[in-house]
Image (spheres, rainbow, N blue to C red):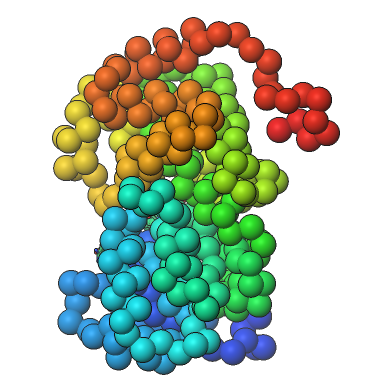
Amino acid sequence: MTNSKIQNPKSKIQNLKSVVILGAGAWGTALAKLAAINGNQVHLWSRQGSQSLVSLLENAHIVLSAISMQGVRDVASVVQSSPVSPETIFVTATKGLETKTTYTPSQIWQEIFPNHPVVVLSGPNLSQEIVRELPAATVVASKNINAAQSVQLVFSSSRFRVYTNPDPVGVELGGTLKNVIAIAAGVCDGLNLGTNAKAALVTRGLTEIVRIGKNLGAKTETFYGLSGLGDLLATCNSPLSRNYQLGYQLAHGKTLKEILAGLPGIAEGVNTCRVLMEIAQQRSIAIPISEQVYQLLEGEVTPQQALDQLMLRDIKPEFDDFSTEQMW
Ligand SMILES: NC(=O)C1=CN([C@@H]2O[C@H](COP(=O)(O)OP(=O)(O)OC[C@H]3O[C@@H](n4cnc5c(N)ncnc54)[C@H](O)[C@@H]3O)[C@@H](O)[C@H]2O)C=CC1
Ligand SMILES: O=C(CO)COP(=O)(O)O
């Protein structure tokens, strides 16, 4: 898995780590490649493979989960029943929300491993570009800055620039909630609504992400960084995004069932949107774009009706509270 062309800028001072990656899907495989480039000992575990998880976990410095949302709790519970070192750092790269609890993946890992550091890895990272070794950047966020810095060293290279951040909830929600807006962006492009419409959609989508994120305890500025705006731009503008593709095909009249059957991998925005609606209703937070995505996914409106509903909402000021120092 090593590649001599790509180098870690800090490779000479780095302690090489034993890294176990859970989930050999598109993202787990790309991350395994990035960690291996730096000479780390990388094990990529898949439920389909024959390798025993117990033997892999025993000596792991870092356990990274790239499992899709629906499998996170099951896999975390399997890991819990295996012997892991008290020093093990858990990293989560999943972008989703748990249906039953509305937890983020890092909240699940932290609940199951309360005495271990948990780091969130998230950013504008379309895996197909990363496996082609195109340059990209990401964020590793944790309340435990030493743990975040260890993970930063494992993945940093001349093709992958990794920043640390102390706001894991904000970093995780940016990556998760943008998937809902990416579905809307796919619809927007599928309907050929033009560049002005797309700019308005993405910008107002970010406002919704900030509203929810602030309410859930994230820092506003995190959403203007790589894991928020950065990932929103990447996902809303790329046909490589499954969430974008899903929206695009909805605009062309396909049913959700048909689209999901042909999609390469998971489009987390579908389930995230349902959980997001629950959170917004419980906390009385206005998220009109996400609400239209929800109704569209439920088959309650057509793409054209969703557009009309958004354009004909009551007119209002651009910002929720213009009197505060920070405009957002
Ligand atoms: N593909 C991408 O470009 C990126 C994906 N992500 C996120 O990473 C996560 C995974 O995405 P992909 O790798 O693209 O999806 P994928 O569909 O290619 O792979 C998902 C993996 O999770 C495993 N899995 C699912 N349920 C499981 C269970 N109960 N037990 C054990 N394993 C289970 C599958 O076997 C598979 O290996 C998603 O949350 C996605 O939003 C994040 C950044 C980039
Ligand atoms: O999260 C991603 C890019 O950062 C991947 O997006 P999709 O899951 O929509 O393919």
